[in-house]
Length: 72
Image (cartoon, rainbow, N blue to C red; front, side):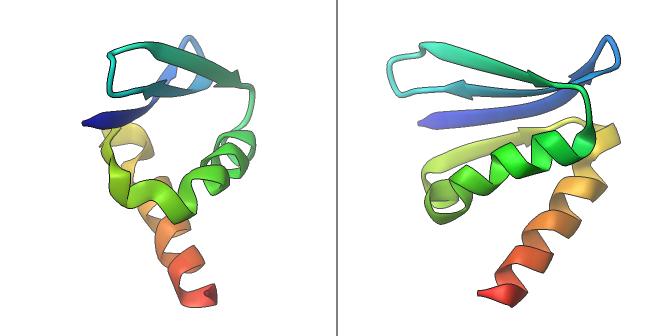
């Protein structure tokens, strides 16, 4: 299954996408807002991904996803 890993490393926010062939692409953001803007791209296909979120970002990601689902 495809995966999205979301975590913070070296004071940078990281969104790592791993496809079904186990190839990864990593995007790094300076702000949490930038990370969440990038996560917006995956909103309509999120059910196709296994979502792995670090403990320190879990609350922000859940809040973002809940807010998005109420707006649709």
